[in-house]
Length: 154
Image (tube, rainbow, N blue to C red; front, top):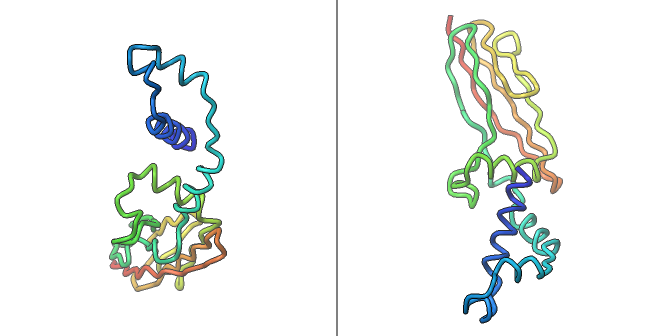
């Protein structure tokens, strides 16, 4: 994924650089670009900082779920509707999350009703209701907890 982002940044940088008139007039653009040196480190930092998540950018899905005993689902961290990250592809969203999220902790208020593992996989154990608390710790130091209400039917 990181390789794709770097390639995308390089492609963007290459397209942003004005082509000399000698190349426009039929010269070899490949030679020109191979000789040019570009330092994207500063630009990379700006892009990364601009694409850092804040608590308002995220939510969990689903917010509530009804299952039969034995059923499962996974709590996922998604972009909040209306945020700048709302229209990203899954790969782009995963990349931003990798860079912005330090850790995610899942916890069930009633694990005998609905248990949850480290990956957010919830399993319906017995009839009743429980809340899955998802705490997202961002690399900025911010932390936010979301709740998913789970109802288990027999």
